[in-house]
Image 1 (tube, one colour):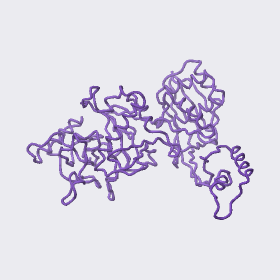
Image 2 (cartoon, helix red, strand yellow; image 1 turned 90 degrees about the vertical axis):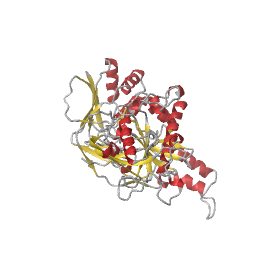
Image 3 (cartoon, rainbow, N blue to C red; image 1 turned 60 degrees about the vertical axis):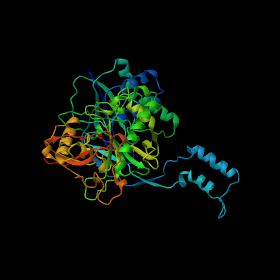
Image 4 (spheres, helix red, strand yellow; image 1 turned 180 degrees about the horizontal axis):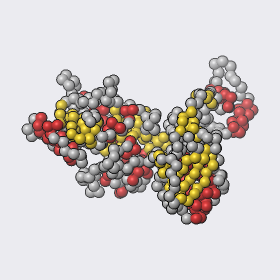
Length: 509
């Protein structure tokens, strides 16, 4: 038996944005949006304990299958509306009282040259005094107004009845104009009217508590962040998806040159481990995150890699860093790493202004704090932040950041270097290429990326910066022909967990 939630859009349209500030409609609505609507209805009904138990059961279930028809995105005109008032007072009643008190104290608009700021602040809090800002309200018109969410497990009868009692009070989903009718049903083998679509956002244990805390912090306009992303499982028979990575976009601060990216990756890993300490999990930092065994020795197992994502691979690329990717080992999902989510949230606090979590990095080689945030959905994400070129199957792969050879050279000839690059592929769990199919050199085949060694006449500080343990190792760029399609990520060499040896697919089918 399974659990099916049927949602019918009574006006035939869904008014909701996929991401904050995105023009793309959220169709089909994500499970975390549906859960937020259920929580709102539960609160309006008086926060009954038996209904809370039903919601807590639902948040422990795996992501549901989402079945919905195709849709047409309706074009909407630009609308100019007053922005939200982030200054106190918060409500219209409080504004009116403050305004009356302001006048009662004998304060009047000052003469020219007087102190105008308090008066302007008072007037700006009134609806008629606020400047209008351009807004759009994305709308999806589905071919079929009925969509379904299907969970594999069915709750016990008391929880089922409680869930249905809540759904009877859900009046809209997304914008308040998106009127809906909802009901839960038990199903054995549901007739799938529409193909399943992958969920991008999921419900998770503790989501109900987060929504309650957000409402207590600001009952008038709670700052509700999106739910956790649904990470795709890697399969050896299919290429990984972008969701295997957590891409952090640079949103503020001075970004170092990509030649120093390995040191920034080390700072980012240290920040994640500090999140474990702040969460009280210092003695339980997983080996897959720290890269070290419990006794402090370097692990021999695959672990979390951190790589820079730069403007590269196009005609006008200049190699400047736009973000960083957290790349788990194959077969491992980030959200399944013990304590990872809690640790990340301890160091990346939710920003209402940015409408996403922001992680701030400090310390050498950074001259000033660097602010990172999870990249938005694929429609608004910068193309250079896409994981596609680093994951999609390709026969030929080229190093974007230079490969750190895994040992010092003995003969110091090209044949020895090609042999070491082939060994690096094998050590990374990839097919071992024929060394004769490996081309090496100073320059990268990926447009916009700097050479592995300074060009003639360039100062020494233009060298790539590597952690001290790798600083004396040779660096080289390579183009590798595996002679068959290989799925990424392709991370090679001794520095592959700290941003060096990142390769990009070049096609060659």
